[in-house]
Image (cartoon, rainbow, N blue to C red):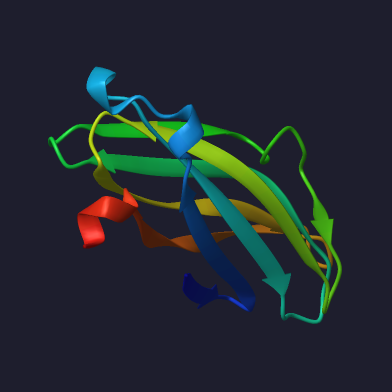
Length: 128
């Protein structure tokens, strides 16, 4: 589990290897990740966009960008949080992801960036 705080927004990431959805023989390794976003500020925010950089250990880098997360642009009130689960496939058994969210601060109608800390995607047998 990794955590980072940017401009009063706390991001926590936890990952799990999805053995039942993976096929190592065909270079398909599936991972799920849970993101927990906590608003530590005194104002309401809205998650507008996301940008991911996905790294495979074979040197491949993919970039994924788009509106919101899992089909929504959640509003998060002061002291509240929002969590979601998504997934990522790799061609190798080790990789990582990092990125950022574009957030909108309602009180003064401004946008700001919140960093998503880099997290590892590692098949459990590689840790033994």
